[in-house]
Length: 405
Image (cartoon, rainbow, N blue to C red; front, side, top):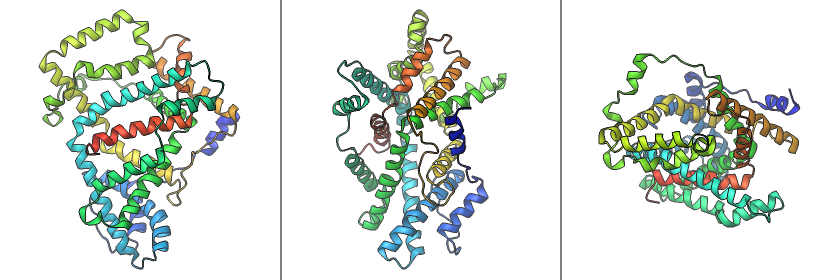
C-alpha cells in the first residue's frame, strides 16, 4: 500500500450514528433542551427526511446562532428566537418541496436535457482552450478559460442569487426582518453553498467521488431478475403520468446520448449499430402510446431512485461532511494531498476504479480507453474551472425550482 493510500485511510473519519433515536436526541438536546417544544413542525411529507434535516439544522443553529447571533445581538430569550427560526425553516422546506412537486416534470427535463447539455458544453469549452498552442502553463490555461467563460464577480453573483431566492421563500411577515434575512442568507450563501462549492470543486475531491461511485457499482452483487420483476417494469401507476405538454421528444435525448458517447465512444466503435438503434427509437417514439410509456417509465424510475431513504442518506452525508463529530463545524476534506506526487497518485488510483467499472459493465474492452478516461478526469484538474461548472449546474437547478428569478 502506498503512502498516499495509507494517509487516505488514516484521514477517514468515523461517522456518528444516523439511527432514529440518536438523531431525535441530537435535535432535542440543541433545539429544545428543556423539552418545552414537544412536537417539531413537519418539514416535508417524509418523517425520515425530516429527522435528517432537523439534525443538520440543529447543528447549524448550535454553531452559527447560539454561539454567534445570540452573543453578538445580545438576545436574552434564546429559546423564543430559536423557535422562530424553526418555524421559518419549516416554512422554507415546505415551500421548496411544494415547488419541486409542482414542477417535477420540469425536473425530469433538467436531468435528461439541461444537466447533460451543461456538462457537454463545459467539456467543449475545455477542449477548445486546450487546443490553443499559446498556453505554456496551468495558470495561463485557467486565466484564458475564465476570461472567455468565467462568471464575473462570482461571489457577488451568488449572493444576489441567494437574496432573490430568500425573498421568494420567506413568509410575508418575515420579509422585513433583517435578523431572519441575514441568518438565512449567510446560511445558504456562506455556510452551505459557498463551502460546498469550494470543497467540491477541488480536483482530488471530484476524482474520489467518481471513483467511489464506480467502487460502489463494482461491489454490487448481480441480482437474479424474476419474471415478476420484469412485469413490474411495465406496470406504471397513474401517479407517474407525465402531462402530454411535458413529454420528452426523441430530440430531447440528444444531450444525454452525446454525454454517454463522450464517455464510452459507442458511436465511434459501433457506428452502424448505433445509427440503427437511434433510427429505431426515433421511429417507435412516433407512436403516442410508446412515447407516453417512455416518459412515464422515466418518471417512475427517477422517483423510485430518489426515495426517502436515499434523500435522507444524502442529508446525513452532508451533516457528516460539515460536522464530522456532530459538534463543531469543520468542513474540510478528509484527506488533502501534500504534493504533486500524492495528487497524481490519487488521479491514477481513481482511473483504475473507473476502468474496472467500465470493464465490468462491458462498456470497454481495450487498453486505449485508459487514455480516454485519463482525459476525462483531467477535465476536473483546475479548481477555479470546476467552480464555474458547479455554479452552472446549481443555476439550472435554481431556474427549474424558481422560474420567477
